[in-house]
Amino acid sequence: MNDKIQLFKQVLSEDNISLDPSDCRVYGADTSKNFQGTAACVLFPRSAEDVQKIVQLCRIHKLPLVPSGGRTGLCGGATASESEIVLSLAKMSRVLEICQFDRIARVQAGVTTEQLKGAAAQVGLDFPISLASQGTSQIGGNIATNAGGIHFLRYGPTRNWVLGLTVVTGTGEILRTGKALYKDNTGYDLRSLFIGSEGTLGIITEATLALTHRVEEKTRVLCALNTLEKSIVLLDRVRHCFPELSAFELFTDRAIHYVLKHHELRDPFATRYPCYILVELESPLETLQNRLENSFGKLIEDDLVADVVIAQSSKQSEELMNLREFISETLSSHYTPFKNDVSVPVSAIPGFTSDLEEGFLRLAPTYTLVIFGHVGDGNLHVNWIKPENETPIDF
Image (tube, rainbow, N blue to C red):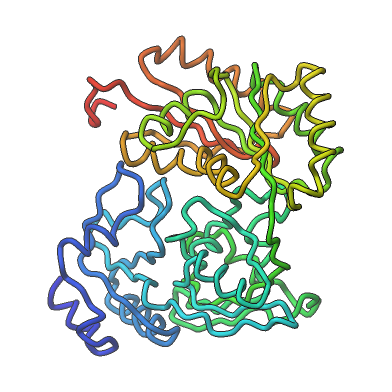
């Protein structure tokens, strides 16, 4: 393979080509622990033209190529496990343009979600896709997976915010799709083909994205439920009472157990409950206080909610959000979870989770089932945790 690697020195400087075993391992794998990266080398292009030349060389010499973004995925989708060439977008990390009046951003694919949100915030705007991994997840990867996140309920998936793309196709052509326009009815929408394609149709190198106004203050409420089945009825009631609703996140008692075990956070309730719902509203607490007290008081009276904590400060609000956002990282860092990302109709969530629990008790009673996710769009993260005495191979 080393003689082939010399080819890439025709298009990249040596400091943008790595044969370091550590780089090959890190950039050749994602966040899951089920797949090991064994990349032949890692390439760091800085422009669409660099990517184009790499793809053309790989095509001519029949070298397998794996595009790599922030590697925050959990299903091995960006894993180079058979000595492939890895093309990392890490050095294509420039925010090229933010237009306050058009509410548009133009960025390279390696810009992180957090980096874009920070750049937009400087002019009072926001890119509303919010992910637990937004410090490392990259815009190209968000688009390639059509990422959703906790604000899907209000803002939808990444697809809704993509106006245009620059893509290098498998034949080494640079394709520009879409425009910096909110309304564009001209021709076929080729842009949509690449959103959610996970790098199979081409490598995204640049994106033009829509932005929205930045919400400066939010209110968060943590609800404790005696049964998960009540979550969808609660969602319906909260939607009717609060048009400001932006997130409605579910997690079970097992999820909060693992987070509290590994982080210096306190349980907001004196009693542990089977299920929790984190509600986020895009409005300051002072404008919502009376409505919150009346609405959630009625929900407790109606036995939909067992207990409730309304965040009274930004610090408490952040602590409540951390109970939800730390779940995935905690499970991945301290255990070897088998992760599943499942979507069902919202109305089917109670039946699905009940069947899942029943099946686990019957078929895998020594395993721990951890469920959390986005009730508002029916997307649940189902995690199997193995017993401590079982080896990863047996698992």
